[in-house]
Length: 289
Image (cartoon, rainbow, N blue to C red; front, side):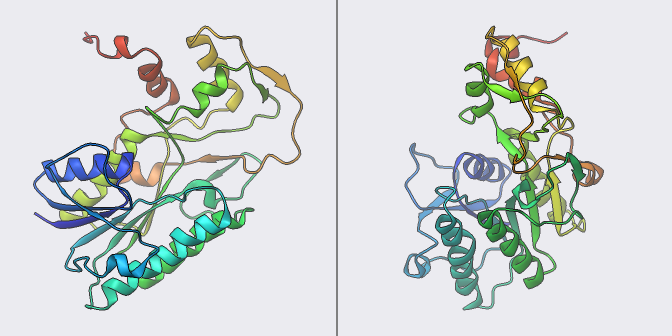
């Protein structure tokens, strides 16, 4: 049994805390706002990591730390609050007692700035064109330099129940770039929880981990293909082709070879398997022969 702190108990953090507690670990979740429902499987501390005083009573004898916090908005100040002020406050709190518990830091593939459909992996250049994403890059670099045992976990676009941006788009007959293809990269939120639980299992088993992993499904498909398929599944009008945009932000394809080589098997290896369960929940519960 390990004593584990999960900083951030949103959808992913909550499910991870529940999963690890059910596996027998001593889990504490740190959350700024109270949980919407009662629970008994793990402890919860209400604290705002941007306020040092909120962390004064936080235990520092944790053996492992997960950081699963996202900014309140896309505003640069929000990213500063989380990825600079918040992280520094946590590091200072643990430094007060000489704690060196290794972190698993949840990051994002927004750290990549590639925009020509290039393939990217953990070793690709991280040079985002948005200053907010640069805050995440700086946090990654700080944590990896601070402790060789710290791990950065980069997730691509997370989807699942409650995260249905592409479904909403597909219902609105959107204009979507068809040629050249604009690629999208996705990971189901159940796989996010699965990957994080898998990493801590490997660490506790004595497996040496790399400092960075990328988790995205096996199918970095073109947005046109994805939206067309979703519209068909929901019996909506197909998207309308639009001319190429000169400034599309980023356009990349994510490789997941490293996490799969470590031994993780994706629950939803492509967008069709993941979205089918959301669009047709009744069919997902039917027995398979």
